Length: 49
Image (cartoon, rainbow, N blue to C red; front, side, top):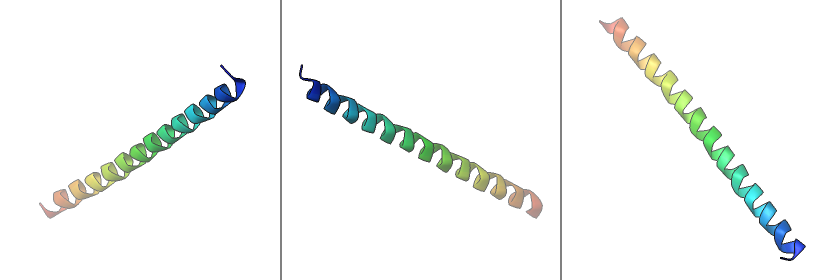
């Protein structure tokens, strides 16, 4: 295998893993934001009762 091919493969995998990591961080942030909204909604419902 040519060393150029290995370099392209390395950078391709590095980019793929980087994008996956960014996606996971975005999902975690969204989950955190939704959890805060849910807690706020629960508090609002408890105050009305």
